[in-house]
Amino acid sequence: MIIKEVSGILDRQCIFSFAASSRIEEFLLENGITSILRIRVTKEGGFAIFNFENEGVDEEEIHKTLKEYDPQVTSDSVMLIMDLKGSPFLDAFKSLNKIPSVLIDGVLFNGGYYYIYMRFHSVDEHKVGDVLKEKMIGFTRFAIRFLGKSSGLVSTFREISAAVPLKYVEINTSVPPSFMKIANDPVLKNLGASWNRELKYLLEDEIRAVYYDKTALLRGKEDWINEISLKDRIYETAFSNPLVQHFINQASASAIVTLGVEQKLIGNTFSIATVVPEMVLPEFFNVVYNATKEFKDWKIDIHYVELIENLESD
Image 1 (tube, rainbow, N blue to C red):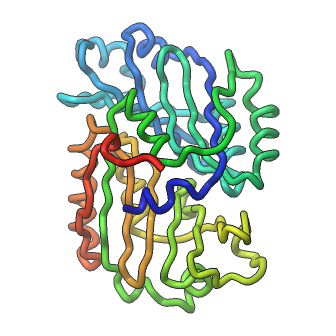
Image 2: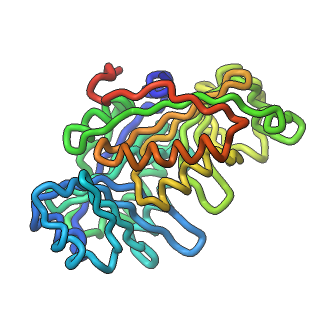
């Protein structure tokens, strides 16, 4: 499993929290609901995708109270999108993502607080601290809940899954020859065809990720890539991949939270893994089904579907 291969590579973790009081937060707090989120950045601003169970809440009340967010209500879940344009949190979120090794693993809203889980490499410790001090510390009831050695990605998702049940999904594909042209791809040219990476974010046509270079082909600094740790062979850069972009854009358009998005290449076998709230699994597999039709030459194959609780921690 890809998640096991990348789980413990980044050595530091931070969990911080703050309170907010928009209509969504008030509704969730009043009804004792825990929601999981995915933050997406756009050229104009950004938005937050909320997924939460609709059990115990009247559907008519959901549509009436949250109508400005155009909630999608299924038999299992409520999915909606909140615009973050102009939000101080969006500014802070962007600043965190600019730090090369930072990966936002998950966001929860529970009991009136947002909890943000992130990992990073120890070389970026001061940068993370600076952003928290400059951008976050003034937020309502801001607190750092944990800052220290990372227990690994699997442990993080197991903790989040205790509040919102999660499923791990891994998909294998066969990359068409037209996308394996080394001369046109600096990642293939310099990192070869054997690496793992974890998605940072997608902004318009640019996808950024943290790379773990197994073959150590890079010998010095390159303009197109940020060197996080030469010793640990960890780098950050942008890449282009139509299948990855399709999954992220379609999941976002459907208001589906996807966490992680780890990837692996061995030769022309490309694997994508993600973690999805169990309550929106049918909607996520609709995105997968549409991808199999649109990307027939990638030969998409579902490889693993497993409860997060069944994955062993590091």
